[in-house]
Length: 404
Image (cartoon, rainbow, N blue to C red; front, side, top):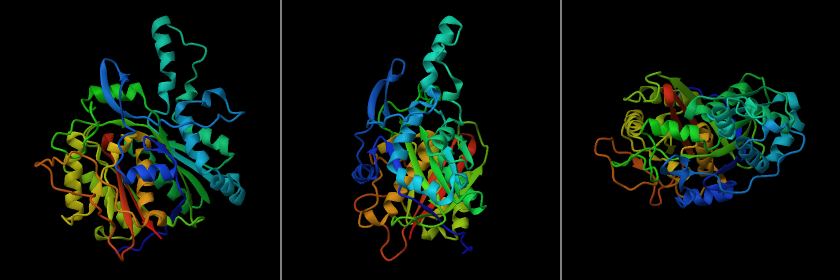
């Protein structure tokens, strides 16, 4: 076993997604396998009804004094998550100083959908409307907004690596702490529903008209969702949650623009890098939150990667995307938050979240040990979870979280 790097501690997350708002509601519906937040809608793809996972809850009042272009749906979701953990964020700024608190967020669309009407006006008239402001959709927008709202002046950046964006944000936040650039980092991600994205996935033949069905023999594609998730990461635990980021790993196999490397080589590299940094063995992992999109190629690749990495050991695992939709740039942080729930002392007596699907196993794929029917972390052992994200362009990330 390799020597483990020092853990970094993750606060109770702020989270909004199709499962609801706040940890209590999200946890309750996660354990129930509740897919009621997923909705059939004809508002996103012209002439077609598809399943999407919108956040349907209330959004907080917009803060005074912030620039008008910062008010976007993406930033409103981010603010809703931030309000849930605002005392911890404010205390970090007071404790360390504004210049020692960093922000690292992931996104993919950065609220480009808010500017869609302006593009329609440009098409129809040849001119931008006066309300158009590119800064509303700039990739830097989430981090700039959150830094100004919080009053932090440390490093602030937004990462956009498709579906690994916010997983990589946590890896980057950990690096900022370990290198001494920051004493605390607000990390996570946000992505809002977007017609541009839904039409893009439709053109690839990757959108399912019904609820996504990961690893099923009759899977038809992804269901898109939206979410915002924030953690405060520090070197020391500041609350009684007792959940740490033990390791993080990433790889880029650059196999294809939109298809994964078929054998899962890059996915295995990311998982091994995370495991090595944590100083753990594959046998130490008690549950895996799979990427599990419900697409033909991704599920096939991930099945092979899991089989090879865990050597047919049968680690309990699940995809949670049937509950939340695929939150794209926010997916990595969202699924890390769901893993965080399973590790928190508050939920130590609960079984593992169920893998929600139709139960029709694909005979062409290696069989995985999908969690359900009362399965739990092995008694008498430290509870450790792995959360995987595999993106376009062969961009892969893996996070390992552990209970105290």
